[in-house]
Length: 222
Length: 222
Image (cartoon, rainbow over all chains, first blue to last red; front, side, top):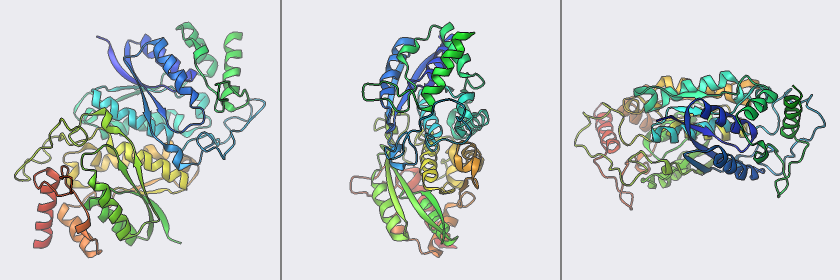
């Protein structure tokens, strides 16, 4: 029997690639996506397609209304998603699209599910491009979460210990895409845009759209 | 102006005492309680009374259905809450009333709210009696959560840093009660029982009832 793991699946290209990498490493997956009051809820439809396309044991969409806290352009309609014309300015500051403690909340809920299932391996698609802007995408954060999780849980205290895998952490967007293409990931079903229209059409101007576009250009150039 | 902090308020005697101690230290509080599918939902009514009695800036009841994961007698009606006749057996193993990753999930959500409000101080009523059984009530867990929180957040990276206060961590139940009585906490409005009836009457037989009863006996003896 394969080892089992839980993955945070957003519907974007990173987590789809992390899932494909994890499957290649011999894991079977439970996937969890979050309906958290994001304006780009269309990503949940993409997450369902990714889960079906790559194959998971179960895909759970977990409802949690963190939009009530406000403070992020991704959940607060009164804060505009920034538009840019190039990638140069991305990552110089923590952007307004940062959702307070989002990865911590999502990983914690996934940890609860993992522990209920007796699973000790967790996957997250955090990577180097994101961590230039989002504090909770840095390798030292992932390590600290893992340490905390091992002190928090029955599995950590009595069992074999929790392992948080972030297989993309040191890859550029182009490297992620090259790896995914190699593994047969269908990126046409993923969506990265922070501010798509109701039909799911990407805006082409947010940080996430620009990084995705630049990543594909770079990946296909080499 | 007083410093501001967020507290996890359960409706039990520990978090009520932690709130009173925090107020005495000069903090004004935002309180958060969780409607998480617990069988002892009556504790939320107690939490409202505690918040009103001790005075908070805002009391939020946050809905999150972690009962869907199962695995705990506190959220799964098919698992019986253990009944005992004395406290001697408590804490020898992680009990079935342990809810996977509960404190981590609650602290993470509180962290998100804290960051949205620009608050860097958090309070939790975890203590020595609990940590004999629950891994996520130990001082090393609280420290690890704090470290992770400082790497996860804008406040941790750019600001003054997150501080997780656990003022009861080294106190026995009797010491907590003595401290609370000294500070004027009205324990008659708190509820500790894991398995009360619909009217909120405590069962008198669960670990939490036994520890509460023994704590009061000991506190009033000295």
